[in-house]
Length: 533
Image 1 (tube, rainbow, N blue to C red):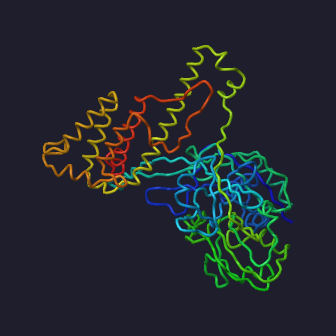
Image 2 (cartoon, one colour):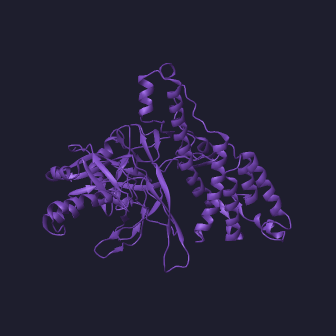
Image 3 (tube, rainbow, N blue to C red):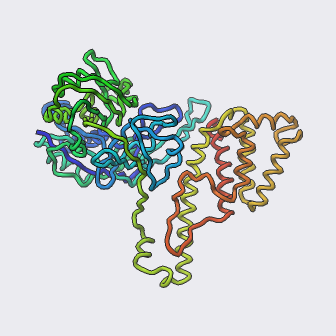
């Protein structure tokens, strides 16, 4: 008999878990910890303890035959494991763009004019009635890596993402009763390493809060009240699924006959689906190569079927426990079946900040009355310093996202990009008013026949072909410079720590330097990508 063990896994370092469809110059991270990654950590500790050949005897049965199955670890919220947000909901496009934290949005199963699919979060916490979803976004970090390949004449720049440290995910292990103690011994309260670059400061995680083992499937417990089946059922994928039909062909539609046979129904008819597909691959350590890429069904996909007959509750539970398709021991093939879905609401996660040292000071002492002026000044400087550091960190994210909207960049030579970069570096130390005036004179000089880029007036016209979104590069630079004493490009407007009696702020000089640094780094990015610097 199987039991289900729940546990928490906390990222102590950033974790690199790349999507399969990696681009040539970038590597995006998934937003959860895969069952296969946790399974790999378990196998490592298992071999370390027993020194065994896991392809033989009882070890093979435990590892490869389904005695121990590792489900994905999804973001933890309100002490529960979140679920993949169902991909069947739609909402007005304009309202989705305006949705803020602590706000909510009405979502519909049937789209109207001006509606788009809700893609605000990949994961959500949900209530028992499945009509209120709290979106959960996993924090990620982006970094740039410069690969200087001696066999290549150009230096290549590569962008990669990672799951940010300090986040907690909740995972599930399906395990035979006789293996529970062994799993707990090897994993509970243990440090494990997950994902790529484990030797370079990535991947360190702590597994903790491991439960004793429950006979009921925790994935289905939340939906137990949705089992009054009449004429239809909904299948929601709780993980990616690799599905083959009877002929062995990979499919992204789960066949009606397959559902009918597993649930003992008289007939099943496909009605509709809202799905997304994903490319699934892996790595074969024995052969030291990647496995073939397969198009699978992405977690959160929804299928609707008409049914005739009575759903056998025992067969239903056994079907969901077993899963669908291939690589189930690694967490693939998970799903739940419910009787209905309705319209609902979607809300952002309410901002919750852990109490830090300044909060403790504020609680235990009345800052405005008991602190000296010098102490208040020190705390004010500390708060301002933290805010400035966060803005500085945001700057590089802004560069990374802005270059995606750059068009016709090759209309400017490396020499021209370099001159702009050097100019911005030169005016960075000036007073804002002086720097703005110098920029305006610089643009006037470029537009003249004897400008900085030579005696031909066409040089200025050439610049107009380079665009950021729909603005030419000169207009874009001018807009940033003229508004440089305020910071309007922050992606996250919740970077301040607010404390009673203290106003966290930045001055115009700091804002000016940040904006000029942004433009300099924007130009530097183009030169790095071309291998010039």
